[in-house]
Image (tube, rainbow, N blue to C red; front, side):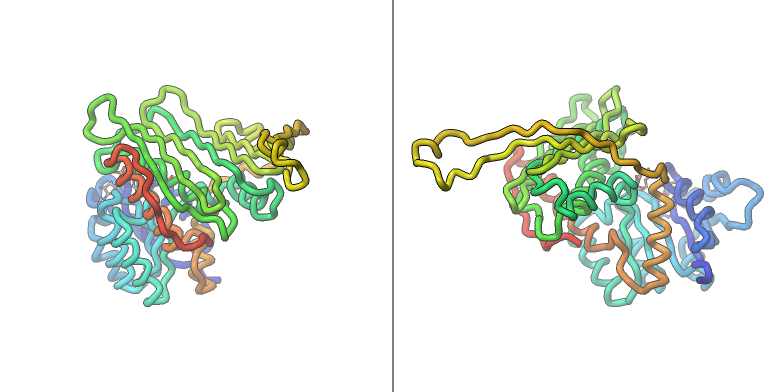
Amino acid sequence: MSSIGLAVIGAGYWGPNLVRTAIATPALQLEWLCDLDEKRAQAVLGRYTTVKATESYDRVLADPAVAAVAIATPVATHFDLVRAALEAGKHVLVEKPLTSSVAEGAKLAALAERSGLVLMCDHTYCYTPAVRRIREFIRAGEIGEVQFVDSVRINLGLVRSDVDVLWDLAPHDLSILDFVLPEDVRPVAVAAHTGDPIGTGRACLGYLSVWLSTGALAHMHVNWLSPTKIRTTVIGGSRRTIVWDDMNPAARLMVHDRGVDRIPGDSLTPDDRRQALISYRIGDMQVPALPEREALGAVLSEFASAIAEHRPALTDARAGLRVLELLEAASRSAENEGHRIPVNMEAGN
Ligand SMILES: NC(=O)c1ccc[n+]([C@@H]2O[C@H](COP(=O)([O-])OP(=O)(O)OC[C@H]3O[C@@H](n4cnc5c(N)ncnc54)[C@H](O)[C@@H]3O)[C@@H](O)[C@H]2O)c1
């Protein structure tokens, strides 16, 4: 396979990670790094490089050596930049969230599909060995039916000037949920409460609930103000429970053979049935061995493979759109004192 000419757009916080990873990806040939601040792009590349720095996006899109772009600019710029790239016939990897609204995201998804181009969303966590293993566990039925998901993603984070904490951090948890749930399980409603206790003018902490079509409930806590960094997700199943602690490299995943069962009450008298028929299982705990691999390498490999194989990427624009549906509903809920907002979503991938 000959390598695919790539340009990275955005040399701020995240763009340099794409640059470093693209250089280490054999299927890609990094040609350009573009930023409105060309000096910043030059500083990221250093002196000893053949990769070109520019402030001109038009110049990048006009270069026939560029078949694909990877966009790491602020969310509000995604729509225009992605659209221009697709119209120029380039494949696109765009950072999360896909765009600032469902309407914009839907236009881009349709444009990419009409043009036969790959439009992939960088849902980075879906490419971690831990999340891949969680997806395998759930989809193989090994934890049984998902009963609850409880996720905490809090740390002392950068208070962003363009988006609130829901739009900054919750895309991670929502994209993970979308990725790991069985295909026939989908969100049906969302509620969110947010807070801005230091008066920044935007939410710095948020609590988000997502009801699933099976009756299960997922809850996410995202927060920029916590001095301790916690990244833990518990996925409770009818057979087993997975605990994912991303801050614990020695045991990122723990699978507990523990759970709570309801004993079927069909053969019981109405009086007995009225009582809670609950039994608790206490079994072993396993720590699956996981490779220590940087997710971004897998993101860029998947982007290159999807282009070469003319297929949608694992986290395509449709996955990005499903995340946007939930984010928009969450914002609407937060503006309405946490009211439950129904969502009508297609099934996941
Ligand atoms: N996948 C992840 O884990 C992850 C982590 C952090 C950020 N992100 C995402 O990456 C994106 C960028 O975030 P960031 O923290 O790097 O932002 P940032 O503000 O640090 O950097 C953005 C850069 O884009 C440049 N830029 C803005 N408009 C441009 C344009 N029209 N053309 C070229 N360059 C332009 C700016 O000059 C700046 O250097 C966001 O979508 C964010 O959500 C993803």
